[in-house]
Length: 133
Image (cartoon, rainbow, N blue to C red; front, side, top):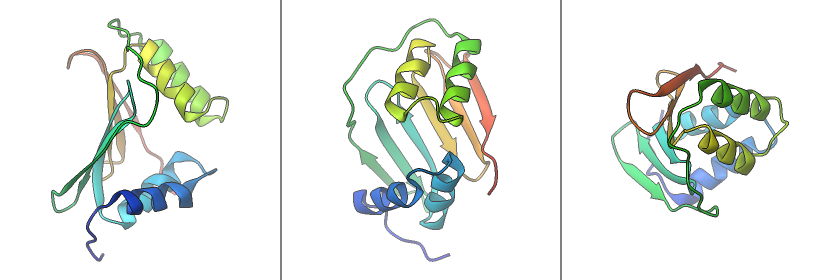
């Protein structure tokens, strides 16, 4: 795999290629450009992408900021994820729903093919496997 410097344009290109497709297609596109993981701040959609070489790219939040709940509600987190996976909710709605359920950040670990949803402190989290395509 050729290592490419991460840029806003490169990430946007990966997003556009995966538009309208299930989440694993976005992950496949990110892996193809050398992304190892990324973290999303739920409150405003600020993203930090880390490449396989350790380089970081921070993309500012681009959604209206809101406050996440301080109470972690596992069943509400699972329900919000399921609704989004089934196409019932769009991404901004998904972020608001997981935020209301107490998720403050989530990390997509592309090497481990996991998404780790993190609550208000480290003792509250939920992990889900990213399906291979």
